[in-house]
Image (cartoon, rainbow, N blue to C red; front, side, top):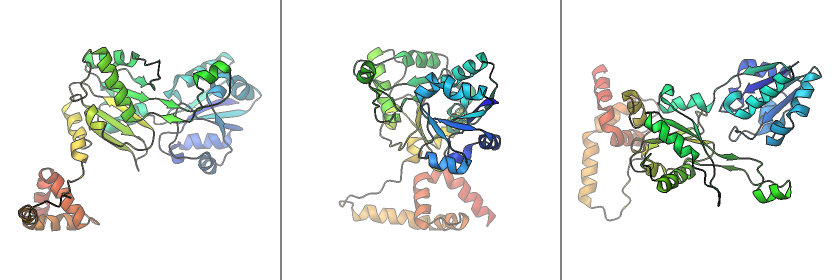
Length: 344
């Protein structure tokens, strides 16, 4: 008998470890913790199909209040029970509390770790040992606008450290009114976006006025769907620049960078900066003069050999893509162009 806490990683049903998958298939009962995080876009049926196991959803009430009857007592009866956790099992304090309760009852607990936001954030190019306190950014309410995160960010900035901001998730939450009335009616799920996070942080700076960060100068990073390499998004810029970016579907996270960045961090961030990722400007104005159009055509006429070289060196690239790349990052790729010419 044992209680297994199994990390699922951040991407999809296939991110579970081989050991984790083997244990899931051996367990008598399997639960999916579904309120501290989610696997974006992944349906329960898809997990069941891949894991070849029936899975029960475990909400906050079950994990925090009903764990003795649903998990621990079942294990005491000699069964194997698995609790599946998005990311790593110890990414939320709720799971630490569950382990403590199990140990108090002398129930064996086995942990199968996996990737979490705490290490996947290294994909931004920031060095993990340069991060300070991690903070939670919760949704502001009409009469509740907590600012404790501001003090943590201030401390990190003072110590020259980055701040990872974990953004609020509201799943199967009751309104204050329904809580008072003890009505089991739940609010629609809400997932905080990078844009909402920034707006609240700007409001906190305007309220506190301690110059902890400058919305027009402080380097920040917005992240979406980290760990899902097919559609993850990482964009670096100031708060006001990132406010203009559509980060798409959840889950999102946010980083406020230290005032001083390591040279390698700066170089890495260049490739996810707002300026670098900005699409090539297309002149749609009907008032463009013939002279401007001729100059543009003349520019590409001069670079025709470079365009041809890019197309022959990168399989599958179209002429339009080659032109766009040269137009957008000509300075960055000239050395590569010269090297390629030297090899021909």
